[in-house]
Amino acid sequence: MVLELERPMISLRHVSRHYGPIRAVDDVTLDIAAGEFFSLLGPSGCGKTTLLRMLGGFDAPTFGEVFIDGKSMAGVPANRRPTNMVFQNYALFPHLSIRENVGYGLLNRKMTKAAVADRVAQALEMIRLGHLADRWPHQLSGGQRQRVALARALVCEPKVLLLDEPLGALDKKLRAEMQSELRRIQRAVGITFVLVTHDQEEALTLSDRIAIMSAGRPLQIGDPRSLYEAPENRAVAEFIGEMNFFRAEVQAVRPEGTSVRVDGLGDLTVATRGTVAAGSAVTLAMRPEKIVLSWERPPHTDGMIEGRVVSETYLGDRCQYGVAVANHAAPIRVVTQNNMPGAGRQQDRPVWLDYPREALLLLTM
Ligand SMILES: Nc1ncnc2c1ncn2[C@@H]1O[C@H](COP(=O)(O)OP(=O)(O)OP(=O)(O)O)[C@@H](O)[C@H]1O
Ligand SMILES: [Mg+2]
Image 1 (cartoon, helix red, strand yellow):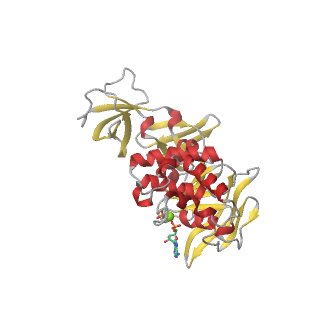
Image 2 (cartoon, protein in one colour):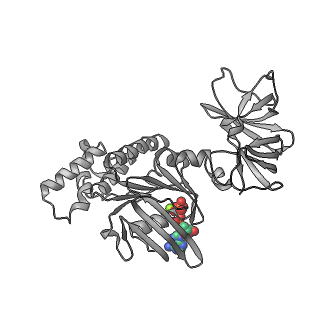
Image 3 (spheres, protein in one colour):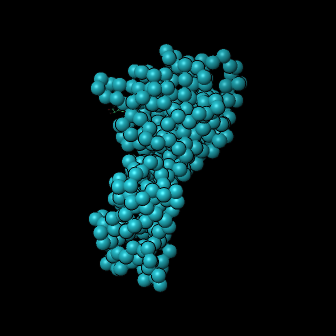
């Protein structure tokens, strides 16, 4: 899928990177806009780092071409590219102070000492660590060191900042703080960010667009909402968030919708997506949080699914239930907000599930 952007900051054209028989990156064509926060999301080994390294000039494509700011990067080494990379292990120089660490990238530039000092002070202010400028790296927390690594990259004013799992080593709380920090900084400086992560929540929170990667190529590229609400195939639906899947057979395709016979749910009409023909096997998908669970039998149960709670997982603010229903092998997963006083021990209770029809997604692959 190629999005035609007016003036892309980054263009990949049929970019592949093979290691012997391994296609780490496999024929990727995509554009990233100037000022965009773009994430590469996918499981371990799907080629995220390899792709990022080719953008930064630390690796070269076996085939295809990378353009940054309109120029081909063929043969252009890392230090001549308008990019800067923040590596996962954010190695700071232990023998340099925070101020010197941040200023390091400016040493070889033709800048006056005062101009360098100014720029470093600005970058430290940006990451809110101005007061720690004279400390040593070992005197900072992991999150603070991570921010220094970020400042060190930003101070060079790259057009593109490449970030390889920059928050991977941080605990959950610090990670959330650093995420909003990253977003704030990206908005403030307006440069293009390409972030590699395998954390879907991180990608959803931060990104303008996300490429869901699998086996060296993007499965789908889109903004967080469309990836979550309208995944194009089962792999994407499975990778982002939780999903219930139902086997179904297409009965008829009409302008107002496609009618399908669904295991455990009966006959339904859903919005038509893609090309389907009567008789073909499809998958219906439904998010656990879009299902409405009633503990008491509702006055009208038409179209509802009756089941029995077989599992319960307490998640603090939410509860996840597994609900066994007739004619459907796997229990249906349902997530509810924990706003019921005294909830708990719901095992074996009969329940009724309702769902808005528009929450059902028809998947053909
Ligand atoms: N130098 C190399 N030589 C041989 N194979 C490599 C090399 N670098 C990467 N690979 C292979 O290419 C594939 C993609 O690797 P890559 O590091 O890009 O994955 P990743 O998506 O960044 O994974 P992770 O989330 O674990 O960091 C993997 O199968 C990996 O084993
Ligand atoms: Mg990696």
